[in-house]
Amino acid sequence: MSDNISESPLPDGTLRHLRELRNKLLHLHKILLEMERADFERAAGRLTSGELLQLVINHPQFAWLRMISALVVEIDEMLAAEEPATLNDVQNVLSQARALFSASTDDVFNEKYQAALQREPEVVMAHSEVAKLLRNEQA
Image (tube, rainbow, N blue to C red):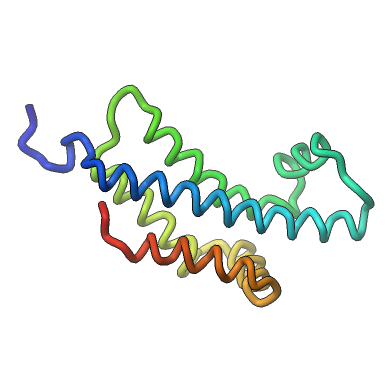
């Protein structure tokens, strides 16, 4: 058995924090997706759910949202893995999220995200919830 605390099973508080972050990221993603959908529909007409899914997966207008969904998937995989996630794993995903929402090196993400924050109060509220969790050092 390793003496390294980062290799120990995660404390319940850390797991709760991770689940809460996942849920807040998902909420933020949903709001942003609805904004992009509305913008797309203004130009191209009403979309079915299946068409939207294909656009989210393949269309460049939705590509920036994949950065948030990738974080959610990473957290989901950590929570569902047969081998428990470590504190290092949690710290890594938290660092990725902090970097994405504070000083992302992705110019397209930054531009679109900042525009969404300026345009939609609901995005500001959801961002605030995510930011609060990212400031909280549960892990």
